[in-house]
Amino acid sequence: MPREAVAAEVLRSIEDLESTTDTDTIMNGVVQFAERYGATYFIFTRIPNKYQNFRDMIYAKRWSDPWYDFYTRHRLIDSDPVAEHCFKTNDPFFWSDCPIPRGRSRTVMTSARDYGLKEGWSVPLHGFDGTGCASFAGASLSLTGEARRGLHLLTMYAAERLRVVDETRKAQSVQLTDREKDVLLLTAWGKTVLEVGEILGLTPRTIGHHIRTAAEKLGANTKAQAVVMAMQRRCIYP
Image (tube, rainbow, N blue to C red; front, side, top):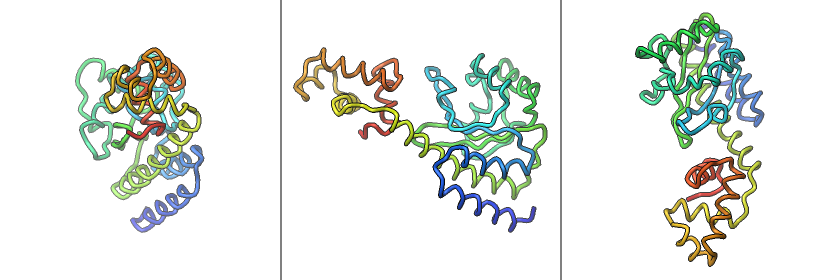
């Protein structure tokens, strides 16, 4: 496709994305563009740390179900060389250009090919939520220079739209009380339970109760996780 045609298509897709808050519509806009170049599967996700569940990190996906089940069941994200490389670069890359050490990392890539993801291309995503990536895969990709640049631009825009939609949905789904927000905010500032209690005029036992109830609503296992998740979901603004 000529350069002017690629640019025009990307701009039309971006205009369509600007007017929607529907995850499927955003995803379809990117998929329709990527499918022209051989991409059968795609996923937009944050990359979890060892304490986080990969399934909870995903903004949107149209992935191979058998591969996704195998990948998550064995927590292959911890050994995925594509995920690791996203921390080291800002530039999109083909999976075949990704450094692959021996051992389990090589097994991850071999297994992906066995499940039909023979070629892949990923866009690292760096921002407030940490590091993530958008990955496109299929039996054979035909991403020329112009197509790569166009898909890169569209991916970056769509990723931001998906992030905003996801965080808005999460913030609306978690209803913290004003007191729970106060406790988490002061905790984020480094205050101890005793100090928080003194500031708010409450007992340590009451402060502990507010932390536990907030953590339960957020799905956090620790006080620190509750603070981080409240920040990510825009429940508090330190």
